[in-house]
Length: 182
Image 1 (spheres, helix red, strand yellow):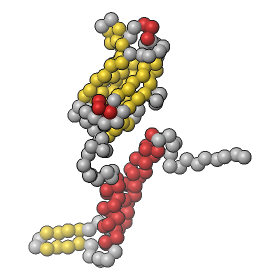
Image 2: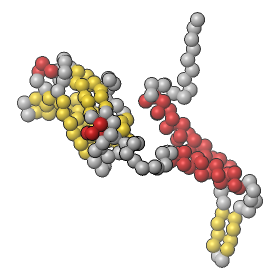
Image 3: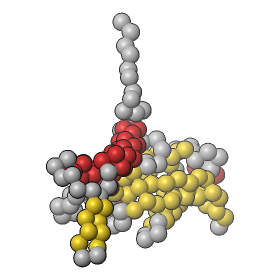
Image 4: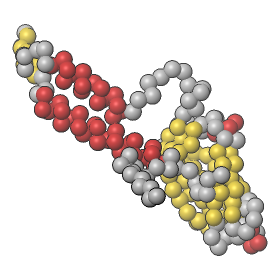
C-alpha cells in the first residue's frame, strides 16, 4: 500500500494508500474527507483513521470506473463537531481505463509530433523545391534546420514525460547510474 496519495491512477482500477494525518488523530474523533475537482468533474469520499493518525484509503475498481480522465486538484479536510480543518492538498491525474476504451492512439502529443516532423525531414531530402506558387497561392516549406529544431523541442518534452514516468515507477531518472562496490 502506497504511503502517500498517488499522483496518477487509472479509472476502473483498485487504488489503495495510507495518509499521515498529523495532529488530527483518531483519538480526537476526527472524520476525513477528500474532495477532488477538475474543470470537467468532481468527486468526494470520506474515511476514518484505522489507528493513531493513519488513514487507510481503498477505492474499489467499480468506484474509480466512474471517474473522468482528467487532472484533479485534491483537498484533504479533517472534520470535528461541524468544523472543517484543512490538512493538505495535491494534484492527481486520472487516466482512462485502458481496458474499457476502444482502440485508440496511446502516443503522447510529443511522440506524434516527433514522428510527423521526422516524416517531413526524410521526405524533404528527395525534393529540392522550397516554395510553390499556384494560381496566386503560395506554400513555403520549412527548412531542414527549422524542422530539426522543432523535433528537438518535442524530444525535450518527450524526455520530460519519460522522466516523470520513471520517477512514478521508483526510478530517479533515465540518467540514473547505479554503482555497486564489491
